[in-house]
Amino acid sequence: MIQCRNVKTMETEENHNGKYQTRSSTSSLLRHGSTLSLLTLVSRVLGLMREMAKAGFLGTTALSDAFSVAFLLPNLFRRLFAEGSMAVAFIPTLKEYLLENDKQKNREFLSCIFTFLTFIVTLVVMAGILAAPLLVRLFGMEEFDEAVLLTRIMFPFLAFISIAALFQGILNSLHIFTPSGLAPILLNIAIILCAYFLSPFTANPARAMAYGVLAGGFLGAAIQLPFVLKNGQRFFFAPLKRAFTNPGTRKVIRLIGPTIIGMAAYQLNDLVSAALAGNAGEGVVSSMQYSLRLQELMLGVFAVSIGTVLLPNLAEYAKSSQWEMFNERLLSGIYIITLITIPVTFFSMTQGEVLIRLLFQNRSFDETSVTLTLSAFTFHMPGLFFIALNRILAPAFYAQSDTKSPTLAGVITFTINIILAAVLVRHFRGAGIAAALSIASAGNTVILFIFLRRNPDINIGPALRSVLLYMLKLLVLSGIAAVPVYFLTPCLLELFAGRGRVIAYGIPLAINAFVFAALGIILLVLTKDRQLTALLRAMRGDRKVRN
Image (cartoon, rainbow, N blue to C red; front, side, top):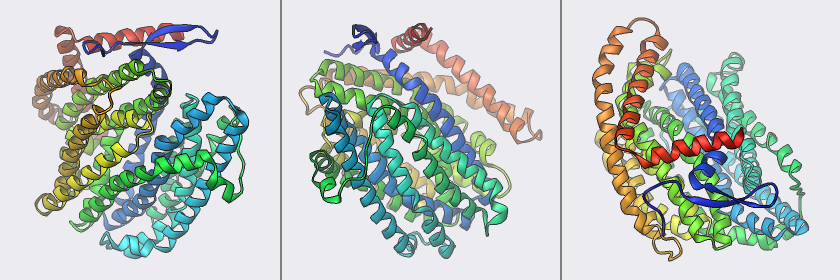
């Protein structure tokens, strides 16, 4: 039975001497995820700086929409063939080879999957370059020719990032997370540098940023390769026939099959939403991208990091039938996500305009841009908790090599999202599309929980009531903490008005963040919140381990 009342649960880990020691699930998640979370934070901040550079050079103009769509297209295939498939199908399969401890068999599998991936991605890149005019036409771009050119420049990014995802899968299977955390950092740095230093030598800033995308994709793969080789994971190009017939490759393909359907549904959400936004008026596509970037900053630091750390561990527990450990680790992740994302959502909702003006308002990003972005952000943020929770629940299925359940959930969610987006965009434009995504994400969470309960080994059902009550508690406490911030904001903005963008919006934001955090912590302490206590104990214990 899962202990619902406290996030601190116990697990056994092997130390360097081969003996076993006991640690809390929360402490272990924090220990493995802290470095990755820090790198993800740096990446998300740089991602914001990238969007700030884009806002400064392109604003919400037709050229900005053209770049957004051109960058969206290879990213859709990236999530379909690279990151999604590597996490879902490759890591659990590689884990089996690593547990067998047969180096020759493992090397053969890596060589075959490397060859298979390279061949497939090369074909997709060639097809994407040729079909660029047909793809761009779906979005109703004013800068049609420029969007086609930018798409063709950036489509090879898919090849680089797919190889990077393979390297990341290898390293994550070995519980090595730092190099993969560096890859998106290099991507953002490359785009920012090219925007500022290459723009004078290109026809427009969008092309300079497109070249930065290519450079960043290459660096993301290059930074991880030495770590892969250092850890003894060798591979080579295998004959194509052998690559396709290798048992490991065939297992990955079987797992990817239903996953591609689910991922395709997920990506079609983005594709159709972008098409609806592109036809809703100039600047709507770009404003939604800016809004999503803010959401991803908060989402990526916690949910992505915890989800990345969870999958290899859950896969190990599932393969060795340690279901009690599996349940405890999964529940710990759910509690951590709940404790973090609900307060962050409330604070962001009260500070949306301040955030947008501080980060983006500059040069081409005018009052219209602020209004468009804020309208989308207001309806994106309520979905933060559900999107984060989905990132935690999905690895529970993938660890068991169950790709059908998340696939079915994705197809149902896609249907809900597209119907709602098509209806709401007519009256609310970008805000309607954002609201549809948040509602669909909540639906996806409910469906995943229902599917999770079908597995008799995953005894998470009794914990759901505890989680729901904890959610309700945090909603109330966060609402209370947000009230003073809501009324304090206009006074602070008036006090610091006219002193430059950083001071006028940055200082009020910092003061409000301090007030909200202080009130929130006080309320959690007064209510004797067990999750906060366990989290603090785990952090103190983690520091003692490191010292």
